[in-house]
Image (tube, rainbow, N blue to C red; front, top):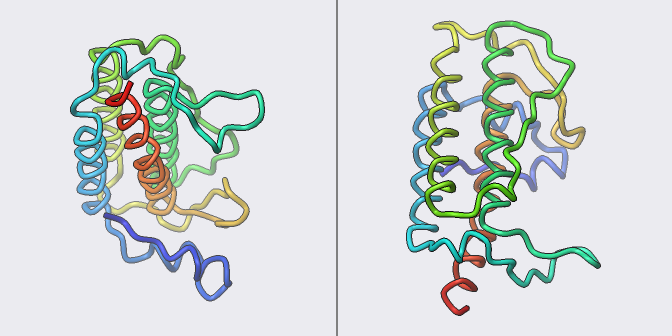
Length: 182
């Protein structure tokens, strides 16, 4: 599993570019498979009821509800695809100004079959964007999406998508726990 030392980043002792510079294109594909395998393991026992369960979430803002399993999957797959798209363009030397974020309406994901279809589609899309990288990617072209992180090249951008997906593991586990107890 990818590990990025965000404490070093916050302390200013390392840049995001430094922290991701040793990651290879091949490792991104391995990490993509690992991410989807981990998500599948977490949601393996999901039922249709679990997909639409509105969980208790103490971190939800006032007047807001916890995110359903369908909502989390729609969100994290959209983020993964956005970073995969951006990284493929950066790897080809394109300068990017706009974002490429499009999210499946989470309300439309109401069954395990739809949830699995969204994950399969995202896996296929992410791998297709990795396939679109040239043999010798341009790693000098960057984009800044998160000021705290700073400029990201193709590797850093794709890595951000993986890290974001990993950040949802605990949320997915908690939704599944609540679904089992419901």
